[in-house]
Length: 133
Image 1 (cartoon, one colour):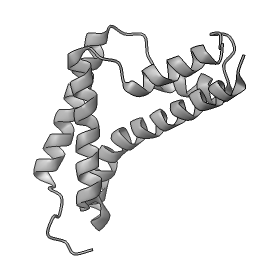
Image 2: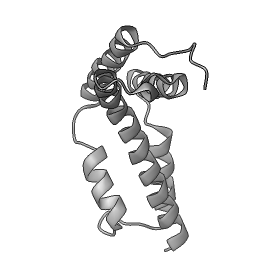
Image 3: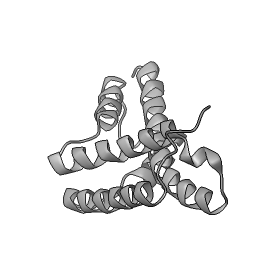
């Protein structure tokens, strides 16, 4: 068993979790931020990367493809000889948060509905492309 692969797999899982948090919490921050008049929630970089992130997730789901990070993590775990029962702390908890046991189509619909909410937030609260940073 190669510990380096396990560490890299945990790192990929952590990055994956951070991307999920960015997408999910991003919408919440946009909506709250507009109410509280936080200027940074209109930042074009934030808004474009947020919209692109959920667009990629939806596209993957509708094409029936797994996330490349999921594929990479699984490959690293196999290379490291990890068994299902030998999970690190990070792997155990992030997998419980990120992965659920539902048919793939359920995720496609959930991601699409979430993406529609992001688009509606984009329309109602557009990014400020004219702002000078």
